[in-house]
Length: 273
Image (cartoon, rainbow, N blue to C red; front, side, top):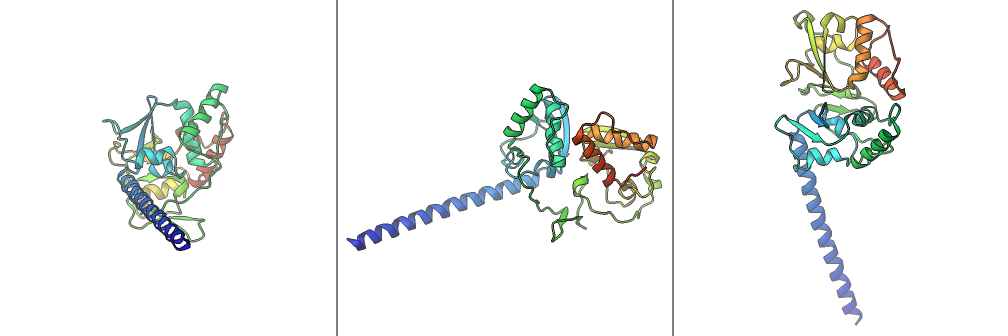
């Protein structure tokens, strides 16, 4: 009787082990499919949010593990429209706060009405974004993370055309004559088009714009009409351009999160009064 019980127990263990192996194999297959699908997604993703166009880096959308954007881009079940945009039936004003969170890691509802705050909380939940989750680095061929996880360097083989201030290490000195760069520079900042004179962008000696335009590592993004793409918030970036045009800093009207983003932008661009 005891032998029969032992045999039954062993058989059950074998069945459970077999089922576990089957589930693990299916899970690994799903993970490989997601990775393959994500690899096919362009570095710059266009979103049509309630009729308003946003553009951001693929890495920005994938910064929180297990979010809706992983499913949107990695499942293979959703495809962009004929115009190349993924449609989200959401309020664009509130969605900008979602993108600010993805850019900065901070949540802010400053400036939102009571109804908009309710919508924002619901939106964060439906997109499966949790501001308290820890960040996890996603390895790519474009950037490498240092062993102490403190710095990010661009790979020598990278052909990336996305400039993300959250994922840029010090660029090499200018090796290309900026005289060959057009006198009017077109910038696509998060889906919003800005144009500025080359001299305006180069007004502060030693800034990132000198390195970016002169290093030969940053090129106009294909399919964007000669525009350089910046994965930044356009409302905040406008303050950077105002500084370059006037020489004066103005943070009037910015909320706490926007002010933090503005200071971060100025620091990464190495712009000083």
